[in-house]
Amino acid sequence: MINLGIIEDEPIMLASIEECFEANRDVTVIHAATSVEDFLSRVPTNSRLNTLLLDIMLPGMNGIAGIPRLLERWPEMDIIMLTNSDESDNIFRALQAGAVGYISKRRVNPTIIRDAVHTVNRGGSYMSPSIARQVVAFHNQQRKKSSVSAADQLTSRQLDIVQGLVDNLSYREIGERLDISIETVRDHIKNIYRKLQVNSKMEVVHKKLKGEI
Image (cartoon, rainbow, N blue to C red; front, side, top):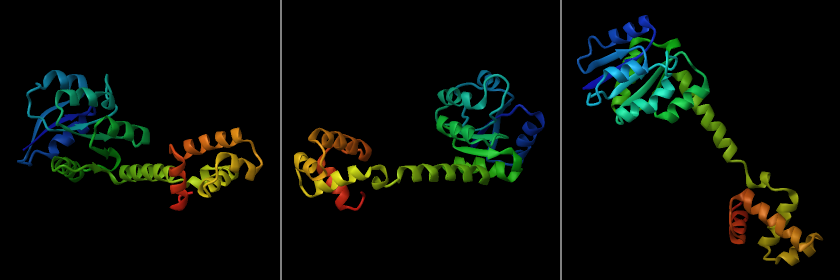
């Protein structure tokens, strides 16, 4: 059984959401409120509440700020954001706070709401296509940032020093090859370690031999 809570301050939307589940025998609306504060004050801690549809823009405490308070009371509850806000900042703040779904009101209908509730109840996550697209774009951007090749991070001088390490030269021999002081070689080595996030000469050489540099 899905025991559902709703926090939505727009009366027409709130009524529409409740109507979505009137004919669903496996969904019981435990309580519908117009604010996080009202919901917390009216629903007992021992309630079997397991799913919540939560708006962001609410009077008093907003939905994102309310997520930790709600999960503190009902740790196993699945929270689905149902909101007009498609701003990426709000999306990621809500997901980081503990929401497992995010639905845009701009393209919402009863089928979407029911599907979202049943999907998260089965252990999944539900997002409107426009929201999912933003999440994918964000992760692709992060992946591209993290996949910048080591060769792009190192200067030409540092690449020369890496080659010296591969050739098993000492710091002094590298300095003589490149006509720089041993202190300058040491400074470059420190920066190479930092950029490659390694701690030893062997790790640098290993990356070079694997073609990562």
